[in-house]
Image (tube, rainbow, N blue to C red; front, top):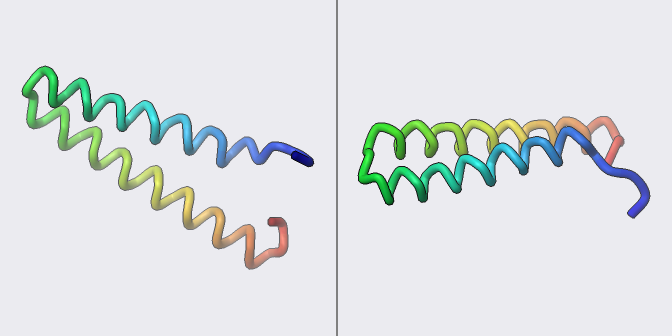
Length: 61
């Protein structure tokens, strides 16, 4: 591995914790919390893919 792309690392950590939050919300049977964590996962993963596309177009990946 040459060097770490820290922004992608943080996107993945936030997405993983949000997925864990979805599991906790299911365990607590809390629909609102589940919806909130699902939206966070969608937003964070979408932002990560947008960043990756932008970096690829600029030739940084």
